[in-house]
Image (cartoon, rainbow, N blue to C red; front, side, top):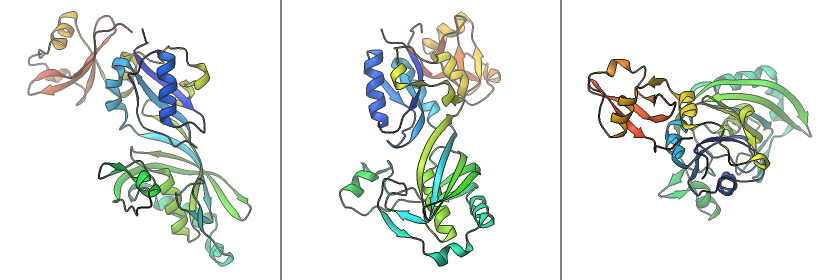
Length: 297
């Protein structure tokens, strides 16, 4: 039987996120596999994969903050806001006159904090039930609405001149739904020279780090974390008695015990260390918002 739990994979460049899921299905002998947020084929880094019943936890992971390292190339705009697209415009010599380190850092600061961001037209956002990138490939014009996101850190790590361009190595901490390609595009637009992304690596999703992840060739049918361990990475834990765990699994409430909850959602763990489910308040009581299958990891 497949291991039930959360698997961390360090995706290499090339495969799609769906390709990784397919590899995990084969390695674990199950089709019940999902992930908490895609990475573009050219991007590398952390994919959080749910196996069997632990796919139910992905809902609580997908919205977590993320960390990326990236390279932004200033001096050219592309059709996709990254290196996979065609260059549509390059900066002339006069445009570079105002682009120095002070201007670059000022542009980065302007894109830090709570910002309004228009995602790239080749993103995976659905428009009338279809992915935006599919519409673009079909020759349709796609205009996506701006969304509010939070960039809590946007730091310049290094910069270098490359064949007439200026490459910036950066690190970004951001809310779910932030597009690093859009940050590259918007920084280039602010500086008047255009910009796009040439490298992207995701290093963190919530409490999960890429340093803990397995490489694709290392998959052996063993999850990185049990459901209980994974849930404890993203929310507080409430330790339950055997009777409380049984009642919650059977759909009953813990009457008058709301004060035991440290947050809106907590992980209920039974005396054997198994995840009963995700618990929430209902009036003065505690109830399960999501119950896990009763499977020993």
